[in-house]
Image (tube, rainbow, N blue to C red; front, side):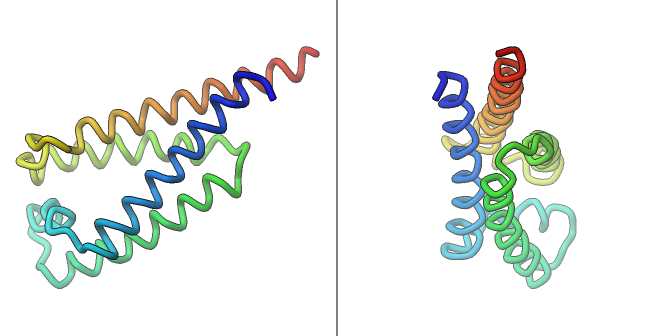
Length: 133
């Protein structure tokens, strides 16, 4: 296995873990109140916000599986980048207080975006190496 394969595997598995963790732990198990703040900031009622968070938690868990099952597909990585950028902008617009905490969406989303870029780059470079040998 080449170094680029290792980088690709580490970054892809890390992304799958982040999606799994954030779908499962704060949304479904803990039901952390910060998860509904952006929705409440958009004027969504609490019951609907709780339902949206639960559904999005299941969606995130399923998406973590997509990242693993479609191992060489690039679209889940691009979707990760777009989703993280969009969610970050959404937090700034609806619940900016979340961006000021010690653990916050600015650093998390930026790291997830960069990890997806690393996976895109290393997967792309690895396939170029295979094609030239």
